Image (cartoon, rainbow, N blue to C red; front, side, top):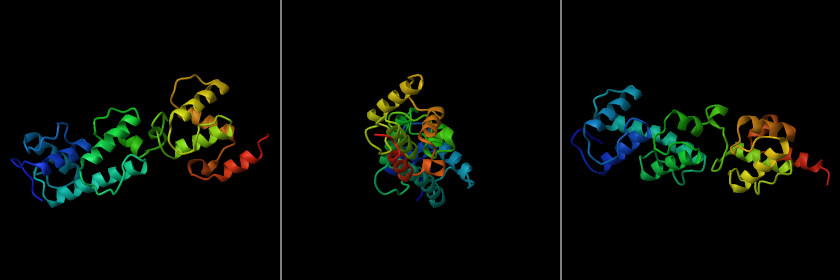
Length: 220
């Protein structure tokens, strides 16, 4: 692998796409290795602690693939990337990143900046909330179980925040006096957890046993 100023073609376009996903390139991938691409490569090389010569050899390319592999794995875990994760800067990976951003109410620019990474890699609860239409994962799954147990049927417990879950949340808000402002923040989430009886460590894991015990004690 050797790409440098003056190179052109699909490999350069893929390189630009990868650099864009990693917030080192802000232009539109055009397959032409010009000054903007060289500057983006140097920025990435500095971040990786390797020689910032603006030339993409094997070391720079491998670093790029490693970073994109981490990104692709996180997108796959949250259900936005299907298939084998290779770390290649593919159109499929770029589109998955944009789809994730749209689902989380972020600017779908295909650049994994701080806000996107906080939600994607779930850096603390601030990276999880708010939960809203399109949200996926264990927090949604547990919210759905709490809603179900509290007689606000979300239509299914699949970890996907769809229209039925949104309707169940509206019902829950009305019942407990929360304003009907759409998304589920950490306050409403913790309230549902408390009303359910608490899950302790089980609450963020897909363990149905607490629900089964709770439901068997519910009056008919």
